[in-house]
Length: 352
Length: 266
Image 1 (cartoon, chains in turn green, brown):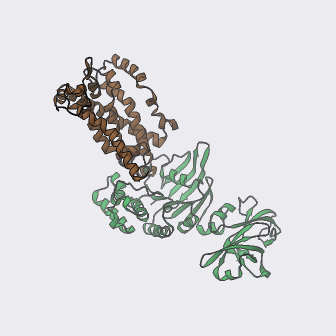
Image 2: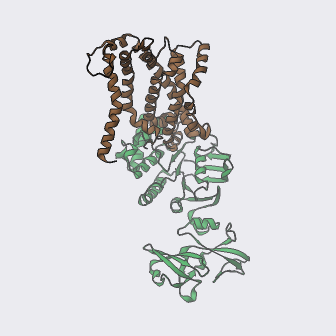
Image 3: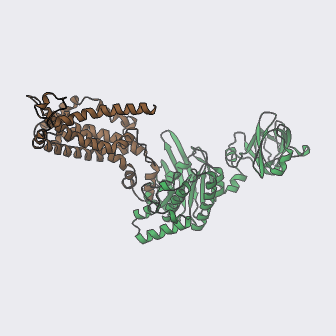
């Protein structure tokens, strides 16, 4: 396994800049997840690292080796595609053995490595089947197995779980985590699903418009989003944002006043995660809002609120506190002062 | 369409197609005398027409047609497959190439045949199968290319990307992973192209009407200055038609699929 380093990487498609001078270190033996909305440049970045896309500028290093202009086959990387890209005319075994054959690996070793990977993934009895005779989840396992037998410097995953149903997706997520620990693999993982990113990542890289919006462990990115975009993208339901004015350590918006640990004055935007907006007694309330609907999830419920000025908010309320919340009624809510996010007026920077 | 109506429609279609064919079979067994009334059903069958055809150079012409067809198809498959792959994957020639490749088919063959004739005359290739092969390439190659584009379009790009990551260059990935996916299309294109070449009379007649005559030219030669030798011509026509019928039977499904744009199930 090896570390991958990306320096000032850039990609232009004609007039459009898809990836704009990004620097990135994919740590050896960890999962780095590139996440962002579609068109943010995450897949292009992955494809440049794989060698499937030429770079417009910058360098890519795998270990100490500069592979910026190397052929994909000479980069010692394995990749798992969203549609698995299993060779339809080969059995699962042949699919997994393909890359080893290409490298003239001795027969016995090929068999040993394929069998080992197959055992790891629980697909030993599927090896003689063609992809057409496999379910989506089984195809996914074969695709991962094909990557594992390579024993590459690093693994690249391009939205590998997107084609699976919800239940299987959660299962495979756990499996990928286990495999990673077992193989101590270096993984670069691309997804548009922030939940997948949070659960898998050692290091999370949030991208937007070809640039890195924030990079760090999922906990840090979640707790201290660097911008309103990151705050809104990471976390579900997304963060509430209220526009207002900060001065003298207080954030003021229509019908709302919250003390903030900030001395500077001027227009600002207050970010509040749904779980930090709770029903309260009238005395300690920060704001009052009309309850529109409640989506019950079991252990909690998502409450859709509308404030007097028309702003809509969402609160994630534990099930036992849901009783005081009545659809159609105006209810008092309290913003947890310990979990505030204050962004600049344009949302681009975190003030606190 | 209701069932009986459909059955009626099919019966009419079968009769319309089979009737002329049956007639040609009958005529091929009629003597010159019986042919005074070609539509009469009462006659004494004779094998004279067949023996004339078998000894009169038709088989040699058929063999030549096979040679021309195989050569044309071989070149078309190699060049057409590579061309189609380039057009499908790299948009070679831009958007217009995809259909523009068939543009030459809109030109009347008569426009093309004169320059070809002069060219082969100057190269001393007139009345050789090389001239016919070259002429046939002008229409078989574009059709094969166009046919294969749809099949390549249907192969997911990720397959070859995976192969390139797995250890092959562009060509290795093409040969080991992409080509096997389009083999059915390739087979259909080969037969389709062969039939096109096999059936051509116009180019073959003008470029090689003498010693290097192909089967359609041989058939046309039964139209003599004494009149049409219907019996022998019918026998020769059957030599030409039967292989095509058999080939069509085997490729019809893929032919339809190719014409409707690939649709390879992946």
